[in-house]
Amino acid sequence: MKSKKRILVAPLNWGLGHSTRCIPIINALITHNFEPVIASDGVAIELLKKEFPNLSAFELPSYNITYSKNANGFKTKLLKDSPHLMKTIKREKKIVETLIKDENISGIISDNRFGVRNKTIPSVFITHQLRVLSGNTTWISSKLHQKIILKYNECWVPDHIGMNNLSGKLGHVNGFKAPIKYLGPLTRFKKSDLETRYNLFVLLSGPEPQRTFLEEKLLKELKLFKGNVLFVKGKVEDQQQKEIIDNIELYNFMTSSELEVAINESELILSRSGYTTIMDLAKLEKKAFFIPTPGQFEQEYLAIKFQAEGIAPFCSQDEFNIEALSKTDDYKGFKFEDFELNYKKLFGLF
Image (cartoon, rainbow, N blue to C red; front, side, top):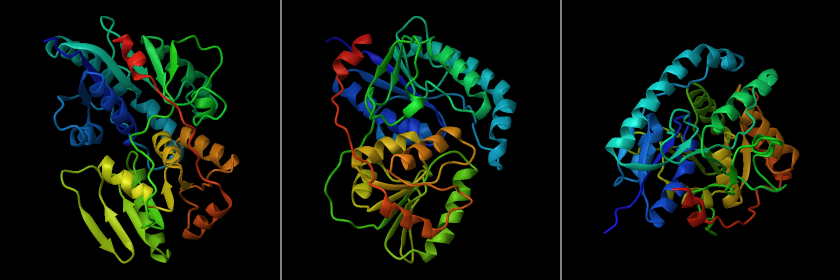
């Protein structure tokens, strides 16, 4: 019997978004008779190990991307961390080389991990950022990112190609000659018409320390909220923990299937404006309120975009108070544009 081709799937460990949007890709690989092999670090690998306990999983060196406590210091901190980042990418490339030999890897899918590629086998880069926003240095950050993308056989962008897209100017640039394939939004969820159980669902994720800052702020503010609240901290730990504080049901994390049900049962979602969250909310056609991660240009851009389009309002972390949620009455929420992704054709590369 012919053995299955083994494909290395390696998401960046930065919040949970990169790993969660790899879930539909991993499921599709299994359906199309490939054997996915997972590689990452931190909460990203922990989450995928919980979702796919039967798949092989390997630890990659950590990029250790965290935010500075001060939002304005994000770019400076990233520059300071760049020598560490370059060393990590070199180590990552060596580990991948070894994995290809030892684990008989036939292809690579890297979600934003720069060192996960190899010239000897087809290598794919997943990103929604063909343009990387960084304020007055956007042109250079975009050029550097595009230079990395060109080292891969293909670049997969999880978005629609047309005007009704989700990533806006991030995922659509003119004159970039990379072999780009638009996959449509990537999400692990399906929409169901379930009875409303929660008036508000708070869904947190993202790097520290900003995740904790927002958690603490929201728990204080929510004391004034009238209605049922489900609050998921986005902290992937060994055991799921549940706590009830007044009208708030509090979890450290939820599995994909639990989250799918919970979002479908919720009236309004309060979250960061991370791109994976946006793809999920679009699929489930939800109303949302966004609090972009301070200092993260991409999330700020997406929040402004969806507010301008009349889909969802936002405000900054510092300015948020519970009254701000009433703004959502004037916004229409997300609507999903259907698409059919031909995975057989897509995986033809391998």
